[in-house]
Amino acid sequence: MSPEVNPFESLQEQIDDASDYLEYSTDVLERLKHPERVLEANLSVEMDDGSVEVFRAYRSQFNGDRGPYKGGIRYHPQVTRDEVKALSGWMVYKCAAVNIPYGGGKGGIEIDPRQYSAGEIERITRSFAKELRPIIGEDQDIPAPDVNTGQREMNWIKDTYETLENTTEPSVITGKAPESGGSAGRVEATGRSVMLTAREAFDYLGKDMADATVAVQGYGNAGSVAAKLIEDLGANIVAVSDSSGAVYNPDGLDARDAKAFKSETGSLAGYEGATEELTNEELLTMDVDLLVPAALENAIDGDLAQDVQADIVVEAANGPLTPNADDVLSDRDVAVFPDILANAGGVTVSYFEWVQNRQRFYWSEERVNSELETIITNAFDDLVETYEETGAPNFRTAMYVVAIQRVVAAAEEGGIWP
Ligand code: NAD
Image 1 (cartoon, rainbow, N blue to C red):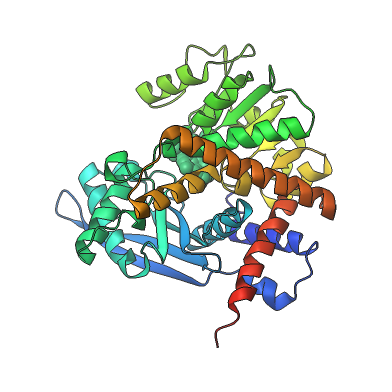
Image 2: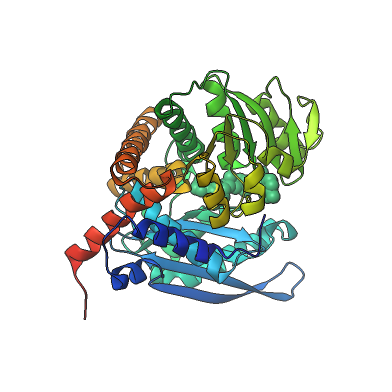
């Protein structure tokens, strides 16, 4: 991982790259490169021992031209204002890439949640929800889970919001437990869109998924579900990793069994289905047909990209390649399918959750999965059409061209408010 790369600058560079294939003036582009507003809050929270700790928290509302701001909330010690701004921008272009009616937002708290009790996390979360209350709402800004947050935190935010607003409004947040208005299929949605993108990519590039070799970096929600569903297509998951390191078996690991092992022991270290343990760097440079980075941003920098041997990269994580890595892989003709398409399943099923909450009418998991498949395959078709029409150098730039055109078209319809 390259902490020196500022993800906000990466986002801006991606927009600049796409602008070469668009005919917009610099003032239009400038607007696309900065958030509309960022909330920065100091959360003062009482700990179990009676002391008070202060936490830095952010919510960036990047662009609302296509609908309410939408995006997750991350709990991580490396959360910064710029990281949150970048992630909120990626949400704008992700929602536009798959054509769902949202703008983009993102939030985060600078915290290592493993150091705190469940009660402390609840108080920290409710304190953040209190700060968010004036700026969120089903038609304003709809948070969701991200790294180190899940149904539990979403339920607390919903409960805090509803209590303070004296209402019931489950659509203020997505990624909730089914009992609180969550959608069927939400937990698996991100991994599912990664699988669908990989399937379409193999098909487009004329490659066979059966017996393809696959390495997955990061074995949390996105990575482990993607591995399982890609395995179901007949591929061989030969290596997977988490923050403890990577495990490898040239004959293929059992993706579900590896997940069960990690859930039981807390990490992949010592997994008995592996024949070898590797470093994360070794995993990222393995000679495989498909590499799925599913951990955090900046996992592959320009130097490491020189050694990447995979033919296809499908990004489950947000921003796993630095701009330098992107250039290197593009020059080396490695086909990279971008995060804003591949991991859009999460926000797409969040959208379905919001629709169901607003209608108070709930869908079966089959319907959710089938509607998701339609959205991702349509977006993939839009991507390859633009890639072929514009001559864009890679799939990321082509996807940004599609997404930026949609955001600008919506902004132009609205006009400029004086
Ligand atoms: P998660 O916390 O469930 O899993 C993250 C995994 O990455 C863990 O297994 C962790 O051990 C591993 N990891 C951390 N640092 C690592 C490193 N240096 N090397 C290898 N592994 C490492 O998080 P998640 O929800 O799966 O999210 C992963 C990525 O996918 C993030 O970039 C997130 O923004 C993105 N994403 C997630 C969703 C979603 O719905 N979960 C949606 C869109 C995008």
